[in-house]
Image (cartoon, helix red, strand yellow):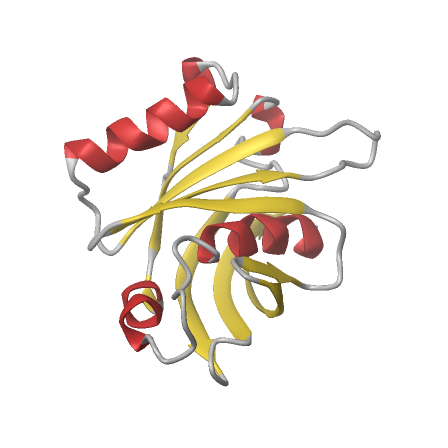
Length: 167
């Protein structure tokens, strides 16, 4: 389950990576505290209350010239919140991985929102499509929410599979 969650988080952190290693501006926009606001998946069970992608983001941090990225988030396991710390390494421009074979892509970053997309082969060999919207606080701009919903439509994720966070 940790690998599944990390793949989604890594995908979100790839959003608008700096084009040069000397550009700390984008890293500073992404590094910091984040809250899970919405998660959606083609298979709603993946993001439901006890699903493997029902996670609560705490923070993201870039380190070492943007070649490493660290995360802290919580997941609910058997009714208990468990803290997970994870890291990924840069393997290509805009691509970070933890050693897994996941397909993930950052889509959008604004001053207060982070949106991403992930595909991950599950235990049954199926590939659920997932999107997530993180915010710097509890409120986001209408424009960011609309971009999240556009991504859901683009990826064929039904709007009823949109799962607001219950942090």
